[in-house]
Amino acid sequence: MLTSRRRCILAASLHIPALTAAVAAPTAREAAALSGDCRVSDEAGLGLLQLAAGGARAARAIEDPGAAQQVVGEHTGLADLTEDAKNQRLQNLKPLVWIHIPKTGSSLINTFASTQGLCPDFPEEGYFTEDVLGPHLFGEEQLHKYYTNERYCPGAFNSIGWTSTHTGVGNFPEEALHGHIVAMFRQPEQRLVSAYNYFFHSWPKKLFGRDPHDLHEYAEVTSGCGVKLFTRPGTACYDPAPPTEAEVALALKRLQTDTAFVGLTDEWDLSVCLWHAMYGSNCKDIEFEDMRPGDDRPENRTEDEHYKYDTTDLRGFVDTYDHVLWDEAKKIFERRLKMYNVTRENCPSACARPNDNIDH
Picture 1 (spheres, rainbow, N blue to C red):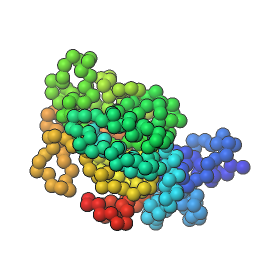
Picture 2: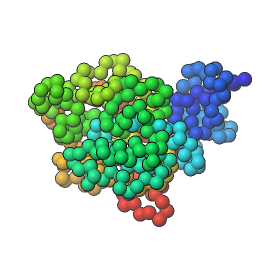
Picture 3: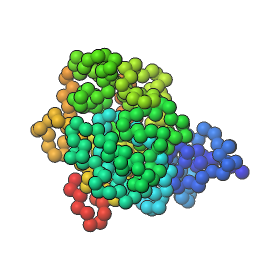
Picture 4: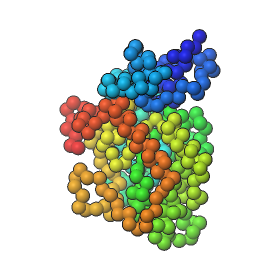
């Protein structure tokens, strides 16, 4: 018999990727009996995870969100899970679907390569470096030679399409997305300026027959790129039609329920450390390097300061569509840092090998 407690644990494991490795899979009969009544937040999910692991005091978290908050406050997070548990979580992530929003960080591919469960025995020459990419190259040859090669990354990436080339997932079946999406997010106006400076990325030149007149026009036409990638197929960001309310709602839902890993470009180091806290393997120095730096970054920024582009030429334009995703992504990211005990103080030392000296 499927008890209400078992029902909620199973429902949580289906909707919160972080729980998947710790909860036994439902039987066929249990799966058929599951309903959507037990959808819970990441915070409540941590309480449920403790319950699934035998933490009796977390039992109240199922019915009482306040109790779940208390559990969160009393536990250091999920960082103490074994490497076996992290590897199981990684296997559940595969085949991953990387929704690569332009100018949010191609360098993430080096983190994939550094993850043993994704790309075992990955060759050094396969890593993306600035020399390999160059400031004006896309690196498709490198991508297909190594990352989509079953020899180096067996079963790692969804065969429906290699989404690192900024491909939308609108034609992907739901089962290919749920718990398999990986995405980085960036402050929307900063991302727009960066994309504009990078050869007017995503500008539909074939449609307009020209380059954009200025940054403001570019932003008006290409805004909502993140929402489009989460909801439309193909080269979605080149579609000048603005997202609909239904698409914004669907993109938000997929971020909240289907996206297993959320990182922030402006918190790159913490994002890399969070990945390894969730999926195991030691981090490498190359993961913390920007392999495609912009040519026009401010020269006067300090080493620890996140660079910011001047947005004056946007003339007050705000990408209201992608801000919906950005605001939610920040909340998810902060929750996950707490859940997995990733901090500025322990990153990157927590994921480095004992004898490594990663200078960040």
